[in-house]
Image 1 (cartoon, helix red, strand yellow):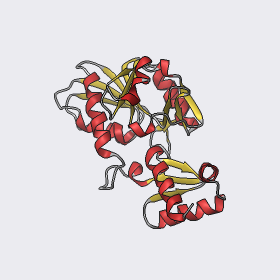
Image 2 (spheres, helix red, strand yellow; image 1 turned 45 degrees about the horizontal axis):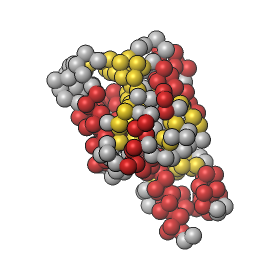
Image 3 (tube, one colour; image 1 turned 90 degrees about the vertical axis):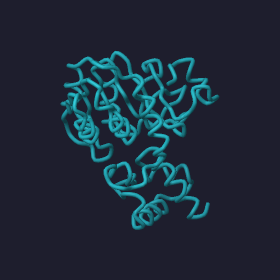
Image 4 (cartoon, rainbow, N blue to C red; image 1 turned 180 degrees about the vertical axis):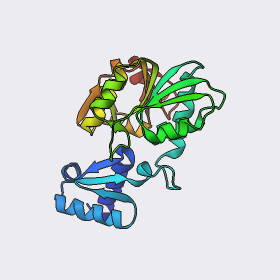
Length: 247
């Protein structure tokens, strides 16, 4: 595989999952980790990714308030718009992190009266702009990779609340493995978030459907809604509609 092809694959994975590991890329591309490190260095020097120990991170995910190219931004806006259909006045809601969640927070009408809990400082800042929204930021150790609060303190706080609806993004979703992620601390927080909610909605761009990460959050039967950037009649979603309500 040519260098340009490798780097295109790497960028695709970073855009989809926000983070890549050198070891995983080495396995998938069948090249040495030294080759991957050189590729990541090239991409970092050109300003396309953030190089970190063991891999790289998406720049657009980490600097959402700057004028950077957010991957699949139009699709994420469409998902956010659909997610708003589930929100009613008086609800108590829980939101995860990520660029799609930020888009949803930005779209919430000023007239909505609701209470939001969130583990994401970035989402909390967006929600705080809404006049009639009460915002509670669940505090803990801020993850440098995911930009959400993690750790035992977060999980303990989540165990003490009960919300009507939880909105979560995902790094992997499949019929076979359910909801998966690549960060152990994030997995534990997501499990606690789902447990604290009466119902949970997963927000995912279509490209992630069928993808699997190394660590399991839950089976699909623990989730109630799937919100994607596809028409509900799309054949890709039909297999999921047997388990989830498609929005």
